Length: 381
Image (cartoon, rainbow, N blue to C red; front, side):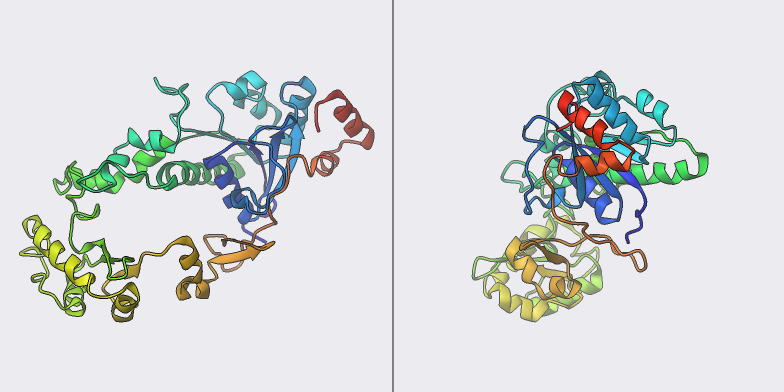
């Protein structure tokens, strides 16, 4: 049983960071009940075992345009510890499910709000996606090569890093506090806020005068020869991150090429980076990725091959850690982080919209007659 076993969390069906947050909470043992739309749309799909971020839930399909449907959700919230939603600001209020109404029914309820731009501000009502949110934070501009434009880092930095992770952190902190105070509160998680927070170290480097705005001209953005990826003879890639002088010395030794002495005289002098990078690139092209792995992997160089998703699932370290698991024939990510006593586990594959409607309503006190009436009225499906 995971550390959140016994907690009931309501998820308003959505896309992007919301489902990933729900997956994390479910993996850690929470009972996550997803409120799906009673009418079919892109956010109310059938069960799909390959929907990894949808795993571990129960689902109830509700017509949120019907007063009876809204009342059904409010009754469910009376039994819940938290709810989170990812609509544009004001949508939940228009539905009759805003924070004031919900906390009025359950004063201990933690109410999580996940948006891209935040609950207020000049962009708060504009549509957007991960790439747009990270564009105004300084993160996207810093990612890419100097001779090309910014490169989208999948949707890891915005949706999941600046979004889901901050939403989950906020929910857990508020749940801890509610356990002491007996009162809930609203958690406002904006992807722009979270991404800017993720940039804290970089902002610190800039304040110290050791980071500039030129792409690929800094230690951690591919500017430094000792912290970058290099192509091999077989056109596969490897990475090195030999920042510390002792690791840098080992890199020079194993690479077999002169890249200067470790330390500030040569290693950290930006004027040296282009020539040393050229020398390293030429050297790495002389062997295959597998050959460089034989020489460098497992050493203190700070080295790893660049793998695609299929290769990653087969890497001996990931296999030993059981970082990938199989559910219904679908290879997927194992729960993280790991707990020594209250072990996280996947509670099951993704379910279809409304698959547990009757079970959930029965659990909160609805009779069979009341469920039938709600279905006949169109409040649930």
